[in-house]
Every structure is written in structure tokens, then in C-alpha cells.
Image 1 (cartoon, helix red, strand yellow):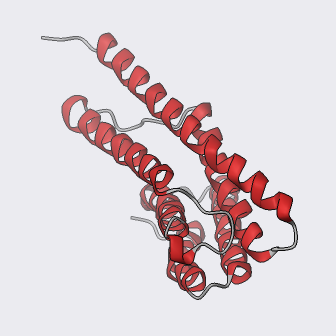
Image 2 (image 1 turned 90 degrees about the vertical axis):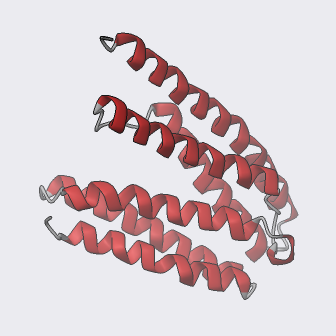
Image 3 (image 1 turned 180 degrees about the horizontal axis):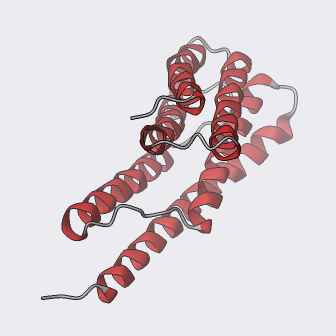
Length: 189
């Protein structure tokens, strides 16, 4: 396996997760937001560097989505704990849906790999929009915790939070449909 600059950036993003959690637990939404944004910047940078300088690697292909999910799932879990909510709260059921969809996707990908040898299962446009909305919702929640004087920001955050489960379920169903089409095309003995 090749160890590249994008891999280092991905590991840095993974290392930022505990710092993000610590700042949320300490009640510092501003620092948590800065760490979350820094993690997002490392995500954009590692992808750019990997493509622009041809530093894609098998290790990076595995680490990058793990780092993304680790950050997002951690954010949803800690921001849905009522005693830690300093801005718009994320309802626990939204967090459960976000995690359940990810578990479903990983399970489906594993089954596809083991049963049919499918190694690539790229994300759909709907899945990318869903992930973007999940990130935006976290940023808005952290902003609402940092900027208490902007009361409208909590309403905007709440609106984004309630859009997340709609897109989460829709993108999960989209994956199920894609898998059933893959299975239908596969020759059976």
C-alpha cells in the first residue's frame, strides 16, 4: 500500500474527530465549528491533491470514506445528546436514521462484495446531496450554538435538521433500488 499526502490529510481528519467531540462536550460550539470546518478542508484538499497530482491509493480509497463517516456520525451522536446541545438540538431519531442508513450501505456493499465480487459501488447524486445536507445541518447547529443572538439561525438549523431524514431515507431507498437492479442484471446459475 502506498502512503501519500492525501492519506496523511485523511489521518489528520480522523485525528480531529476526538478534538471536535471534546469541544462539543466542553460546550464550545465555536471551537467545535472551527475543527469541523478544518476537517472539511482536509477532506477537500486530500481529494484535490489525490486527483491533481495522481496520488490516489488503495489505502486512501478505504480511509477517506471511513474518515468522512467517522466525523459525521460523531457529530450527529454528540449533537443529539440533550445535555450537550448549545444550539438547535438534533433529535435522537434523526441520528439513528443517519447511522442506520450508513450501516445499511456498508452491509449491502459487503454482501455485494462477498456474493458477487462487486468492488465498486460509487455514491449517487442523491447520496452526495444527502451528505452535503448532513454537513450543512451540523454547521448550522454549531453556528446556532455560537451565535445565540441570531434567533432565526436556530429556525434555519431546525429546518435543515428535518430535511436530513427525508433525504437520508430517500438515498437509502435509492441504494436498495440500485442493488436490486444490479442483482436483476447478474446471471444466475
